[in-house]
Length: 250
Image (cartoon, rainbow, N blue to C red; front, side):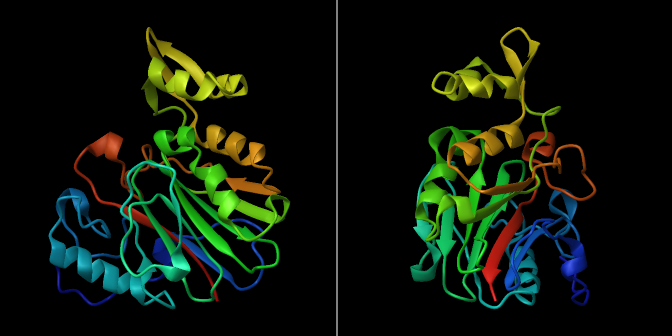
């Protein structure tokens, strides 16, 4: 762990390119700006990724300098449960959260799974969902939309960095999980080798958001697997760090 001065800033982050209203703030951290070393270098935020805990806490302290309140962390389990971040006083098992109070920071961690951020056109509520294939197949995005205190047509969604369609090889079980009930999902899969498919996870997220009647959908172009300089990728590296996607109302 380094004792270098805090050089972390918003310039080290991905800022969503979406038509969010004034007063909505969102960012996704990258590998830059932290003190972790080795495969976790440098801005690892995951305490369960095998990194030195003191380094992680120093990175989290640097992140806090950009935030109005501490992040509402979740114990992510690749499920579909959504919680109210405004009322959290612990770290619940969940994969999405929503908030209406100014300053509450909805937060998820990622390293190939998609982060999907939400706000409404009036800027009165926000949400964040952790959308790996299991969560997507289980309905985490539809559940998040249902928990937002706004009509789906008034919501804006942004799909952040995740594993891209040329890198995400899956088996027939994943194809079955998505296509058995929704045959329109089949065009998000391309046969790769016998029993294996290349899966377009961002396309599946867009389809899920469209089925949930979300009014405006953006993002889905940044691949964690193919950009090792900027992003952690569990599938690429195995031992690696975790990034965070965060959103809040000012």
